[in-house]
Length: 286
Image (spheres, rainbow, N blue to C red):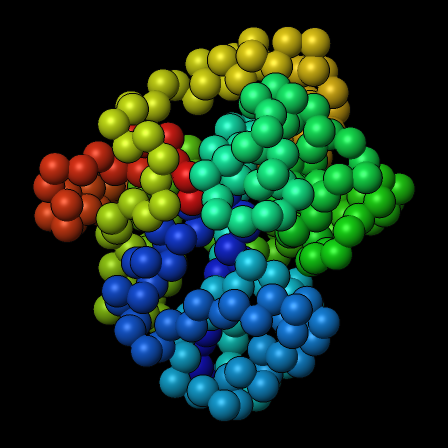
């Protein structure tokens, strides 16, 4: 039975770093898929076409990975995702778009506005929901504009179904822990897999991240009277985040030698870049 890893690369969730590790482990067996419109329009059928044309692939990464996967004889998919605390995604999206060499509405707004006013603009319902329950919509497999009614009626329940069906959902804030959990499952079929990494697309690499709760408090303080709106507009993402965090804790507890594996993983990472901090020590842009 052939197995293929599917990385649903969610915008601003350290996906570029994870893809770096996949490329390092699998070489030509890794595909960083960039034909976004084709994937959005054809989804599972396009995945089938990719694997027919390139049967050697072990990993496919896409910013628009479909939720409904094709049935292919003698092939099994292993989807995985990384989520990020939705309030910390705000800063990452702002920094990325502010530095981006592009003329998209988001990049223009980020260059013209300070952080709070950029977020205020992003909260408008006629603006792309890049930082409004974006991860919920992604896990629901909806890669087009989603109305609030659709989000409430369908996307959250579909995202919960994805959570239940996909055991490999990690967290950016617990990146190293997530990689150890991923390896514990994936190495059964891919013994050559090594998810040690050099962090990619990093902003402010010299700044050491504070505790997640402190970072969230800092964001909320900067947003001021906008904070309630931001929380309301990310309520589903916040719920998903807590579910994933709780399950990740259970998964690590179930690995008898987890502490040893984590220490060994950190050593592998340090060997790749001895003078650079790990993802868990950085404010990331990916």
